[in-house]
Length: 451
Image (cartoon, rainbow, N blue to C red; front, side, top):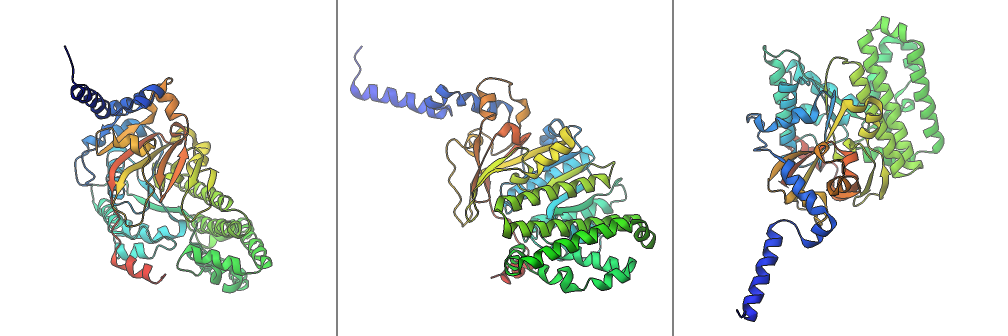
C-alpha cells in the first residue's frame, strides 16, 4: 500500500496530538515526570465547591490528612486570593464542626486579637469595625473575612454549640496596642514603676504608625544608642514582670497577668524585628518574625491545653522546610526557615501543613508566568479545577518519590519559591483560578490614607 506525503503528515500529526492530549510529553516520559502526573491524577480528591454553606462530603479526605494532629496550618498563595479565602472558611467550618477544632489563629499581631475575640464570644459590635481596628495588616479587612468572623459569632451564639471558638493573632508587626496594654496594666498593679515609663521613653511614639513599614523607617531615623536603650528598657520590664509575678497576680489575676506578660514579650520581639531590619539583613529580620510566631502559637497551646488549633498564614510561613524566595521589591532569600519548620521541631507530628496552589488569575498587576515545570502547572493538568492531594500517599521510591524530594518551583506573593515538596507540606489544595479579595469600605478608606 502506498502512502502520500499528506497521509504520512496527517498520521504523524495524530501521533503528536495523542501525546499532547495524554498530558505527558516525550521528554516527561524519558525523565519520569509523566509518572508524577499519573500519580497526581490517581490521588487527587476533587472539591466540588468553595461555598462554605455546602455539605461536607467532598472534604472528608481531610479526616485522614489531619488525623489526630493538634495543629493544622492552612496556607495561601497570596494574602488577597478570594477563592482561597472562601475555601479556607469552608475548611475551618469542617475542622470545627467535624473534627473538634476550637482555636483559630491568624497571621495578625498578637495584641490585635482581643477585639475579634470579644466579638465572636460576646456578639457585641460590628465585625467590619473590629477588623479595621486590627493594626499592621490591611489584608484581613475584607468581605471574605467578615463572613468568617460572623460565622464564628453565630456558631458561638448557638445554644447547642458545646465548645466556643476562640480567636488569636500570632504576628508581632504591630506592637503599639501591646505596649499600651502593658502600660495600662502597670498603672494598675505597679504605679510607682508605671510613673517612670512615660510614653516617649517606652517607645509609644516610635510605634505609632499606620503600617509596619512606617515603624521601620522610624528605626532608621533614630540614633543607635536610643535603639539600645529601648532594648535595655524592654528587657528590664520583662525582668520586673517575672520578679513581681506573685504581686502582679494578686493585684489582678493570673489570667490577666499571663495575657499582658505575653503582650510585653511581643513588644520585645517586635523591637528585635525592627532592630534587625536596620542593622542586619532582610532574612535575619524575617527569622525573628518566624520564631516569634512559633512562640505565640506555643503560648496559645499552653493556655488552651485541651484544644486543637487552626493556623491561617501564608504558604511561606506554613512550610515545614526551608525556602528559596525570589519576590519583586524584596531581597532574594536563600534558605529561609519558615515558622512551621520551627513549630514542627517543637511539637513534631502534632502539626499538619497544607499549602495552596493556583494556575491563573485576573490580577491587574503582572504575576510571574507559570512555567511548565512548576508545581502549579502540574496541578493544572490533573483534570479538576479544585482538588486536594495528600503528599504522604506517594510511593517511597521511584520517579514520584524523586520528584517530590527534590526542589520544585511554585508561585506566591507575586514571586516564585523553590522548595522540596515532600519536606515542606503534608498536602496541597489546588484552585485553578483566583481573583482578588473584596475589601470592605473601611479598608478602602484606610488604605487611601497611606497614599
